[in-house]
Length: 330
Image (cartoon, rainbow, N blue to C red; front, side):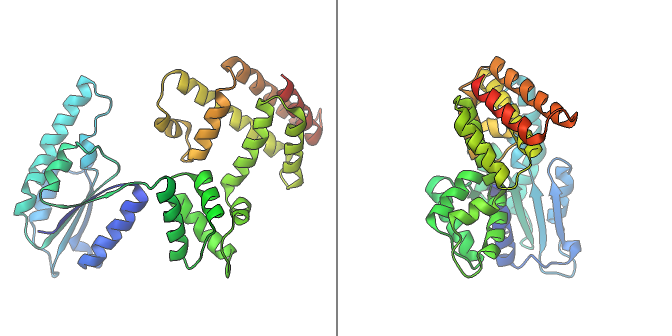
């Protein structure tokens, strides 16, 4: 019986899943012979019964199960999570043990996210299934992935543009793919350049904000004012810029609090609500230069500036200039 395990980066998993189904000719089966179930919402005995059923007016029955391996991922190592994990093992082991005996007309695919290599269900399934681990590329591999993805879209991209895109977006392949789709249309007939990336990718605006906030953190009012004035000349409204400063200070406070509590860097992005390695890295660098007391003081000053504008006591541009000068000298 054909069986596959596909796990890892969600974008690459989705791509591999499409290829596996297309190569096996099971992508266009009748609806009655295509089953997609979630391990968290399905009963293993019912799934096993489906797998043992012969296809109806078709040559194959496709059964796609999501999240089985995740039932074996510990949630903290405590005794309670261990009992829950053992329970999940018993529930799904009847299916994983039955894989070699399922009908040849059943095409079974286990789909999952990142799992540990020691996952017991993964070990069990690897004896009877084709296993595809789709790891998120990083460093040079990510640059090569960006280059290939641009070529797949009928475009090309310069090395500096690849580097900028990787730094801004990080390993979020879904976002990179969307941005490359947009950039390939924007740069029709020529290679995508780093200038295109900076002009079209939303994260580039965050990079400009980071640079301006860096000047504030370093106590350089002159460069800070010039940076924020440039943002206004580029068409950004003062209230938007103030909101971005407030957002960045909030991220800095969160990053400082999480690191003080010992949260590991790989978990910081998720806890901060961002998929961008660039955002995490830059925010951490800024958080290390300030105490929580200093962050709170600057945050209060931002709120005062925003209130002064909304109450009509100061013009937006003037309020922004005074705010930047105060933040850089406090």
